[in-house]
Amino acid sequence: MNRHPVLTGLGVIATVFVLFVISIYLYARYHQVDDLPFAPKEKIGIVEIKGLITDSGPIIEQIRKFLKNKRVKAIILRINSPGGAVGPSQEIYAEIRRAAKEIKIVASLGSVAASGGYYVACPAHKIVANPGTITGSIGVLMEFANIRGLMHKIGLKGVVIKSGEYKDIGSPLRDMTPDEEKILQSLIDDVHEQFIQAVAESRNLLMENVRALSDGRIISGQQAQALGLVDQMGNFYDAVRIAADLAEIPGEPTLVYPERRRRFSLWDFVFGSAAEKLKWLLWGKYLSLNYLYVP
Image (cartoon, rainbow, N blue to C red; front, side, top):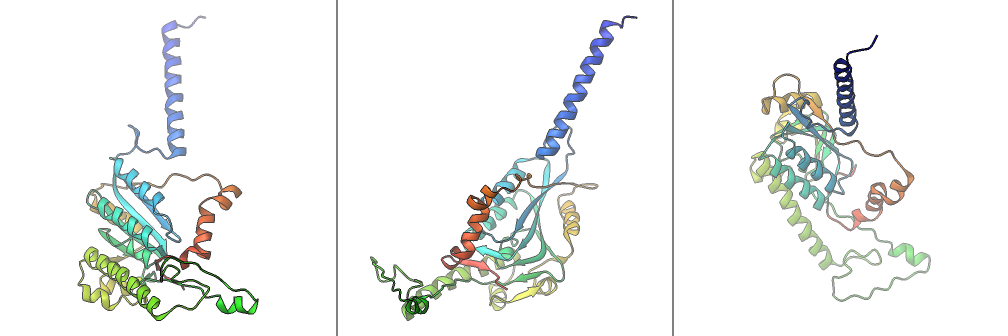
């Protein structure tokens, strides 16, 4: 018995449409595309700041991506970081501060959010921490290695040709002079004052009060709340609830995470970001200003 051609055609069209929708859904799920017409409208973007802060690019890119997505109504900064280099920390801070003028932002502090890890949380509308979160460490660090004695023992001598008196300041080949120590201390003090000012302005605290606890000490999340550095105690899902309330999102919000990264490869480790962080640990941190808690 022959089927009606119209019904057959409609069946084919319906089948193709269903397969198309399923394909789009699977593609969107795999690539985390969340701005499709049939996607839920109210979302919270999750920006993860983990480990040493050495590169601001990926974090800033994710923040900007969420700002462009009109369905993302709030952003949560999930921070597990002891800090890192001053430059990237300040770039992330500035981007978060700009974003906070357009969207609600909540910082959720994990196990550690110290020094630069706390610095980047400051512009958030609310900061949520666990009672035992390690935070604070408001200060600046610059470390130098001196291998002069070792070189003398093995019979090596370093020779430096320089254009100015202070061009090789911090050289590991010789002892630092008193004048050089004064120059570097002045630099540290200036950047430290920038940290104090950022905390005071972002948290609406008196500069004198922030300066009093900005000696590099670490404190717990509970202590930070008492000092005005943290708004309230809670875990990540408490931060989700707070963000939803601030953004007036009804019901259970959809959480949008950063795009999945490619699978680990030896090439990435040797030539990619892992190698960059290793290089920073071994050499870069001794040549840069750092908002860094070093346990």
